[in-house]
Length: 367
Image (tube, rainbow, N blue to C red):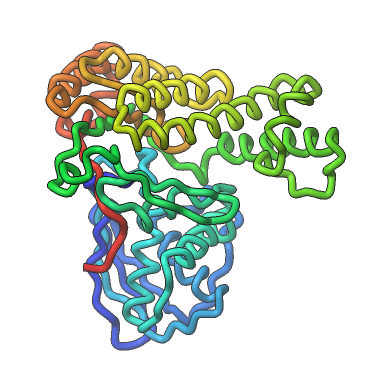
């Protein structure tokens, strides 16, 4: 699901092919043309805020869309939320895509925009991520979980409790979302850990597929039958075994979590979220000392039902679902405990951004 914070891009069509952009978070003015040929970035150290606008043009060019008009725009996120593991890079990419499509009178479906944003990340920036972030941003609806199948790109919406649809329609959900910030900046394209995990999962898949006589299948754990994994997991090297265990256990948690949400069972959903967090630490081995501290503090906070890392989990923030009437109490507890544990890091975070109380939001749109 999305939250009720986001990226805003104010824009008008330019008179020609010129793009001119300013940012609320970064200095300078970006200027280039939509008919300039964009080439993928070769060195991740060269990625900056301009890269996402150029990446959007690159993706649209490569998918065959005809761009004649540029945009004049000002983009701004919520102060303190950029590079926090909240899919802000995908949000920025989608904002640029939707603005360019709007001024060029292009009709592009959410499903196609998901693939366009994936092209920005994979082809232009060199990050081996999938469609989770852009799908959540483009498809989410308030009051629902978006249940996605990343292999088929299909999705469905799940009510929060079939028994409380009438209550849900009044906008009354019985929980809040806590976002707790570690103070560690999260910039995936410049971090090698994320792509390394993707490679390890592919290696685990390759070994399992070969062992089951399916070596012609793509090296994706999704192509490995769970029964084959259970029978053959003993062949995996220790590192790969942990990555595969995270994947297969996470798949089970997703299905159980969907069902718990549909029943309105927040306690079971919270337990599954926390189990996901533990597996991220033990099996996927992401996070850091500070992120793990923050995760453990959240689990002890009053009213918190479950917690885990947000995003890839190497840096950025942790999230939790919390009983609605105890959200502020939980936020105060987390602020105090994490400041005591990491005073230097906390001092770098604006006081009003150390822990946020959020609600579910809606998907990306042109207003």
